[in-house]
Image: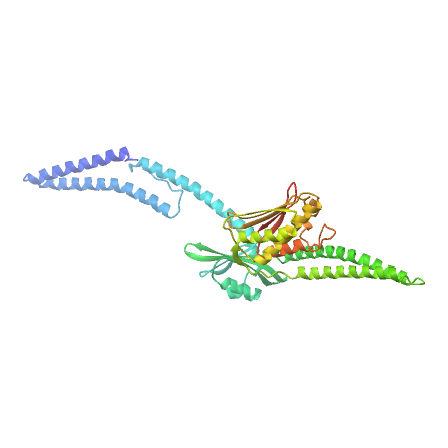
Length: 437
């Protein structure tokens, strides 16, 4: 950038004048009888020194005032290079930097106002907890959910539930849990999430509270509706022949003479249908009992080999191909996971056999990049009709005449108990069930 030329020339002139004044003063002091000249020479030297100091100090003061304005956030200040201050290039650069800073600050303020409005209008209640301010209700959802004059201590929120107040008071790692809050509208389940933040050296915990009672009620009602629909269908299917057979037995016994053989046949069939209904009820009891997971680490390859042997014993005419990632270790309950996969393999074998094809079933066990375990069971059967894909995991729903509709629901329960998910993947041929643990 360099010095300003005008400033340099004026500075050189003042320095030259100071040197000349010093030379004249020295001559005056060396020549006898020039007392007045000596006084005048000293005055000239002092005036030149003052002028030189003022020339340099003026620029320093302007730079200091500019920096001071910047320190107090006044981005509208400009560098005044008039009046011999010099450093015009420096002033131009500083002014340009100040203009850019002004634009950036305006953009930052607009972005900050947007983020503040976004946080304030987000439909999830947000609270912050720190040692300096206690508990603060950050947005509208939080102020609607909790009273405005609530207080700032965690214990002040005990009226909404002791567990919730303990969560606000307890420092620790981020987490999520479902709590029951005592709200004016009544007790409600809510998902409470906690995260740790650092704000200018102050540890702050952000807590979100999302009431989900309405959503859970809707899901529960939908599940109940589906369950009642399936149960009604299955029970009516079983009771209709039971009623018909009972009527037939009564009719043949009322004849003269009674047709004992026909009555016996009707009663035997009635007993078998009653046993079938009892088996159905026992299956319902099994579905209603959630599985208990005892997870441990075990090798995927020997686990898959055992499933291969079990499958070959049941379905010797169906080809099973198993692919397992090398040295893969699974974290699960091996017994429950085996039960789930055996159900899927059996369903796949049945699908290929009923379609009259050369059965081909494939199972793959791999590890994804995010660390999750991916298990897929695929077959070359007719696939699952699109109209019933959403129902295949419902208890007692089946498309087979001899099916119970329990297997896939148990598979889903086992997978969910492991914290995973299972989906029926859309394919052009066959069916693919994908488990993600």
